[in-house]
Length: 96
Image 1 (cartoon, rainbow, N blue to C red):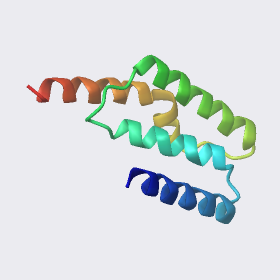
Image 2 (image 1 turned 120 degrees about the vertical axis):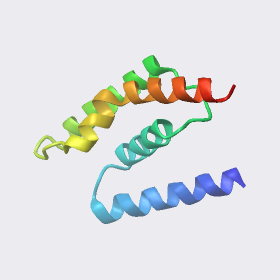
Image 3 (image 1 turned 180 degrees about the horizontal axis):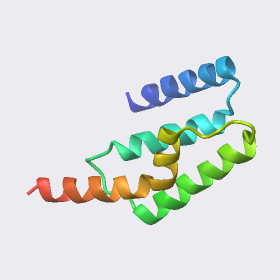
Image 4 (image 1 turned 90 degrees about the horizontal axis):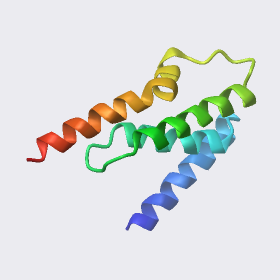
């Protein structure tokens, strides 16, 4: 079942990439980031997550220097590790 879900998500990402002409790698990375930010069930390493989001922000700026990064994307890419820290803290203490 999980393999089917992953294949479906990949298909949607490819279609979205072709439709919007946005780099597929950027779409995939942002998909991972959004899933991690909304995750309450698993512990996510904030340091690793921070480096992943910063690299995604660099990719965004490198690929689309002419496009102003929206505030909502900036908040997730630059300050996303704070959200992960908070979510992991909340999920850790609410499981007891």
